[in-house]
Length: 156
Image (cartoon, rainbow, N blue to C red; front, side, top):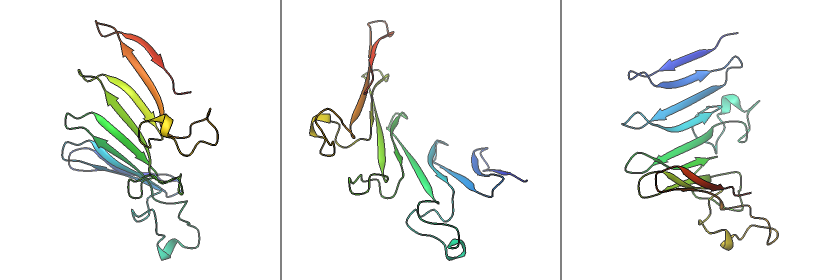
């Protein structure tokens, strides 16, 4: 069994191949922050299958892309799993699922919104009933005047 690991000139991990021959590929921005991670990398396009792999691969098997976007001050703004075009659609709920991170005025994480739709759980058009929300699941953290966590509220 052989595994491979590749690095770029800056020392960033750019590729790993596991013992089954599956690649995980990571791309970085100019500040060496990871911006995309592609699991089961084939050709980088999650909507296609290379002809050479058609005997074993399907669209659900390959090119699982996760994109990380940053704010201007370097904090994570959102992570998009199942990335295709970055736009969530209820018709394809396994694609473009965003988790959005919001920060308070001094840069502390104050909200995490999983399965982001518009940030308002009350406008959730996908829930099968009024007591269950499939999108905009918000977890919050509050801080006291000296910066200690005062409380957290989980989305569930």
